[in-house]
Amino acid sequence: MLKVAVVGVNKIGTIHCRYYDENPDTELTAVCDLEKDRAEAAATRFRSNAYTDLKVLLEQEEVDVVSVATAGEENGSHHFDPVMTVIEAGKDVLVEKPISNNIEEAREMVRFAAEKNVRLACNLNHRFVPAAFKAKQWIADGELGDLLFLNMKLTIQNPKDITPWFHLRALHPHSVDVMRYLAGDINRVQSFMTKAPERSSWSTASINIEFASGAVGHLTGSYDMSRRHPIEFCEAAGTKGRLTIDNVYENVHLYPHGSDELKVMRNSIMTGVGTFHETFTNRFDHFIDQIKTGVPPQNIDASGRDALACQEVIEAAVSSWKNGGAVVEVPQIVKAAVL
Ligand SMILES: NC(=O)c1ccc[n+]([C@@H]2O[C@H](COP(=O)([O-])OP(=O)(O)OC[C@H]3O[C@@H](n4cnc5c(N)ncnc54)[C@H](O)[C@@H]3O)[C@@H](O)[C@H]2O)c1
Image (cartoon, rainbow, N blue to C red; front, top):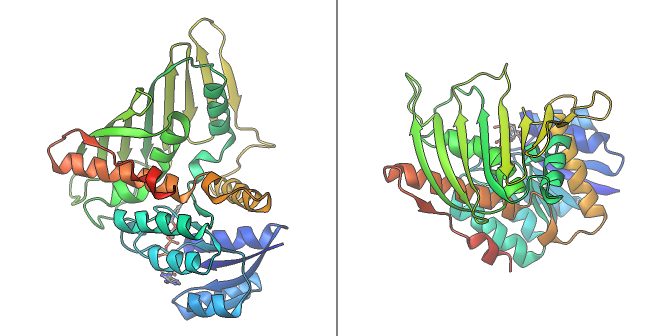
């Protein structure tokens, strides 16, 4: 049984709590929030102990794993302090996305986790769905041949104009992670952005991408669309075939170049994903399984290193747009940071 604490127990932290409370392999030992009422409400609901100070929690409770679901500016500025405190204590940690909105802090978290040899994972939940697993398997099995392009679209409605780069930094860890999951590291980007009427932030973006493999791709992102309709679409193609993933997990199609017949896997009503929040369950199950089976920190899936790689791509896109749409190299510091 793994003993878990959750830090930041408002909207998303409550989903974390519910998961650890319901999983037979985990026990939600303690919760922590700067807001005493929130900590106590979560502790009462999930029959655990309430704290307002993570350091006190770590002194007084025996925990193996800490989930960090704080937020802050661009939904990521409050992650650094609790994550560093947990790493210092030598515990495994799962942090919400973005790992940080501040690239220097993201690099420091990944570097420190490697130094302390703790597992640092990120809730990059969009890849933890049967459709993405199948797409990854088809690519690995050579069904697409040599990969030539991968295009991605992720669009929702979010009217907040927190900073100019809120849309990029807060939403696109998900889309960039799925792109990297399927097609590997990204070397260079070039971006154009626009603002919907009355908005002050770059709420819609178009980003060209060059993968390290030589494949090319594109990301369309927006905070100006609707949550009622499909939010995500992915298309990857190579010398032998093309695949598409509809709306995160609804279905995945394979279109072989040499055949009129398609392969289709639809989201199963019995074994598939019921709602978007079940992508959390899949992601957390995977992390808990990796801890239980002793997967070493450097082999954790959707790791802090992956989350940092996504933020590096996003910062390169920001830099491109600040420089009039220039082509920008993505720093490959991620690899060095964990050696
Ligand atoms: N993976 C996903 O699909 C997904 C979806 C939505 C949001 N998120 C992410 O989830 C995170 C949380 O989002 P939210 O909407 O619940 O945020 P929120 O602001 O509603 O809640 C954050 C909580 O953290 C607490 N907190 C801040 N710093 C703290 C600290 N040092 N110690 C203890 N508590 C602290 C705050 O008091 C607050 O209660 C964000 O990073 C967001 O980007 C992920």
